[in-house]
Amino acid sequence: MKRVSAARRHLAITAILAAAIVAPIARLSNAQFAIKVPWLKSEEVNRLANVEREWQAISSPAPADNGQIQHWLMWAWLIGAAVTVGRFGRQSIAVRGIRRRAIAAHESDFASAIACAIAAARHAARFHNSLDIRISNETDVPFVHGLVHPVLVLPSEASEWGDEVRHHVLTHELAHLARHDLWSQKIAALACVLHWFNPIVWLLARAASEQAEFAADDVALSGGILPSGYADTLLSFVDAQSFRNVPVAAVTFRTSQSLAPRIHALLEAHRSRRAVSGKALGSFVSLGALVAVAVSCVHLEPGASVASALKQPSLSQQISSAPAARSTEVQTDTSKSEIGNDDWVVAAVEGLVRLLDDPSPQVRATALSSLRRFNRGDERSVVNTALTNAHVSPDVLFRTRDKSQ
Image (cartoon, rainbow, N blue to C red):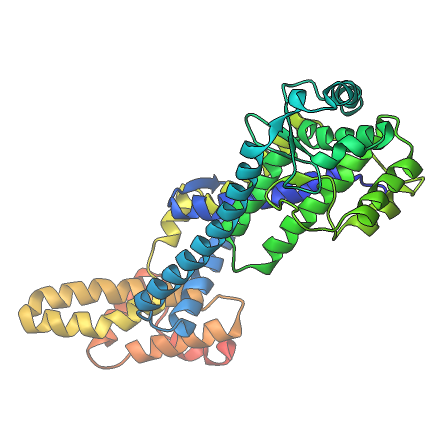
């Protein structure tokens, strides 16, 4: 994994989370897009279709009424999603409160020092958009928040930082803004809302957050910061402060879960630190969403000739429906019943005769057994006529006994 940079790993995880968001929405929309496959051989598709229909007729149980189960599952999902939304909403409201109550940086006692550090950090992080900087005594760590109008909130203790520490912290936070990590954080949160019951999604969201921290550290190192000094800055936050008052709904400079791996990654000399642009992030996330739509809504469909063959009823369905249809027709009109049954028996016998040449011994045996069943009683003359129309001698019922077994 050293050959793959943290930025690329974060990009891949974010694309997966975006696909997890789009897939259920696309499936609920009931949109279907068919892609015809005309190059398939009709004989192969017909054989596969017959096998599938016969298997479904034999093994598929009768559909059960699961409407009540779906009703309760939907309510369970809604309750879980509401709880998850409430959790994220409460965190976001808390961060917005800290942001609103914070004072502007130019009103602080160290406004000139912050202005100089911001100018250097912008160059190192390659971030040139507008930014609102505020100072708050309600947080222990700096963080950025806001998708459209981002705000960088610094703790009041920032006045005691040295120039090197201030440069490290500001470069890291501006790297998050340059990488659009706030947007990827919202994608992860939305995926957790939709899939609150799936622990894999929560693990992916946590992995995305950790990889975003690694990637921001790589941006800082690429801007000329020494790894040893940067690691000392991270350790100084652990020694000086606790992990209380950390806004979990924002992107912060420090996380307790990934601190040790981050320091270890900083000191790896041959680790890949290649960055990913914002355009690449948007393109890759869009690609993941398109793949999810394709998997959810697009289905393969055979060509016109093959599709017409697949729509024909299977032989077992014809045979199973024959007695009921015949008894009903006999009760209503005898003459019409004979015509209808004769046509059906001719079609059935012709299909059974073709199955006598099937390479499968089980199929040949079943076809021969069905032909002998027809060759009894009133259908004997109809069977002989059907065999004649198919250019097959009636003696085939006796000659193929050994062949089919």
